[in-house]
Image 1: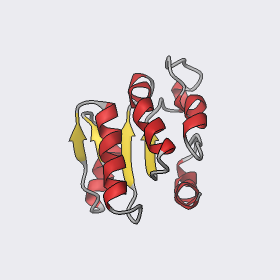
Image 2: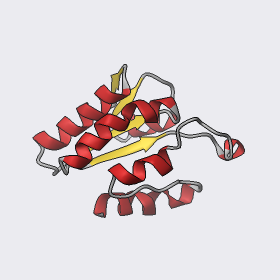
Image 3: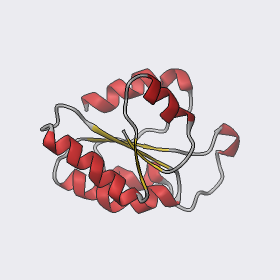
Length: 124
């Protein structure tokens, strides 16, 4: 799992489960790292990249479009505001903008849906 420098509880949980977080300083580089990981494993292991919502998701857009154009499987997890922040305008709506450069995009609004949505993301 590649991530940008930030504090996030999901990263801590993933590390406890044995997923090795790799920290990067720029979102495009992080997406390219996840893309490269997927390529060297021939898609048998999917690269994952997590970034902040808004400007982070916008900075990652070019790398996401490239991976999509090359049919490289990458799982992207853009962060977002909690439910109390829904309706705030982040400046870049990744859920809407990524629809054209990904196979699938979904907004996670309930924690109990995460296992189902992860299965769906990995089987599309």
